[in-house]
Image (tube, rainbow, N blue to C red; front, side, top):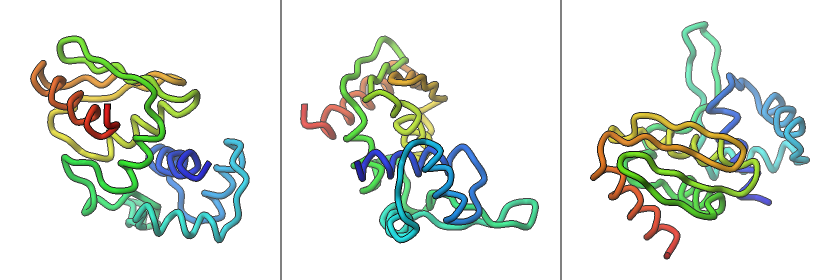
Length: 151
């Protein structure tokens, strides 16, 4: 449950301007996750979520870019590992199957990695398409997922 909640937090802050923990808690409750503000506070700390200044002069939560690189960061790694049920690739497109409702979280985790070889992600309910720059990048990323999942 914790991994799913944290995956949802990453998804929410990646897709919405969340300015307060109370707003994040309301978004989580709307998504069916019932938590306390203290739990959300611990999740924010574990996920290394920070506040950034927006162009409107307000602050919003975001995943810290200093902790995200071409390799998986610790918490994104755990979220990603908990979400994926199966994956494969054809040429430069990866198809990743997730637990129901967690494709957006997996896609958000991939997007948060800011990898130059990823051109984009498209998420449904339980499937993510990842368009890679070329076939070799797709094969390499598939291999990285395979080693991450110990398959």
